[in-house]
Each structure stands twice: as C-alpha cells, then as structure tokens.
Length: 85
Image 1 (cartoon, one colour):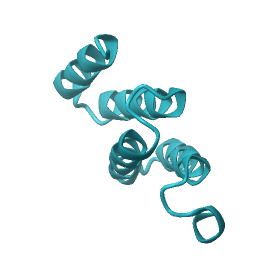
Image 2 (image 1 turned 45 degrees about the horizontal axis):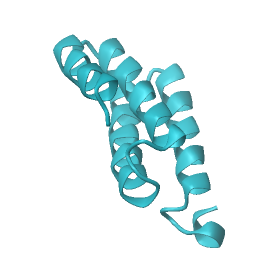
Image 3 (image 1 turned 90 degrees about the horizontal axis):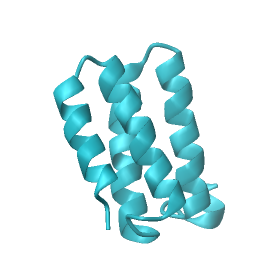
Image 4 (image 1 turned 120 degrees about the vertical axis):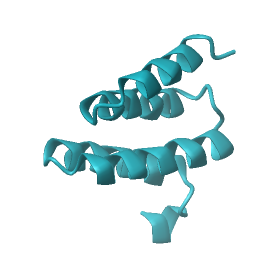
C-alpha cells in the first residue's frame, strides 16, 4: 500500500494501525506502541487531528500504554483526547 498509495496515505496508515494492533495481541507491545505513536503523528499531519482514523489510532495507543504499565501517560493522553477541539 505504501508503494501504491504513498507512505502517508490514510489507507496505508490505517493498515499500519491494524498491524500495530496485531503486534500488541502477539505480546510485542513495545513495538506496537512505537508504531502507533508514529501512525498518530503522521495521521495528525496528513488527515488532521480530529479525523476519525486519527482518533481511533490515539484510542488504540491508550490501550497499549495501559497494557505497558504507563497509566499516568495514558491518563494524560486520554485527557487530551477528551478535550480535542
């Protein structure tokens, strides 16, 4: 998809978000966290911070942060997500 649609295409990034979810389910949570952070950053830049796919990626990142024992960071991210303009 990256070769056909572009590295920052919303469809490409949505697939990468799903891949990160699979990594998380396989117990590779650190790798999933890094991937989701990258996806969130790129989606925010390309489709906007309030796009449904960006919000889904941010939500997925919260789950991974919680599972990685980073509750305080997840709470801050959730607060930012809840007050997003």
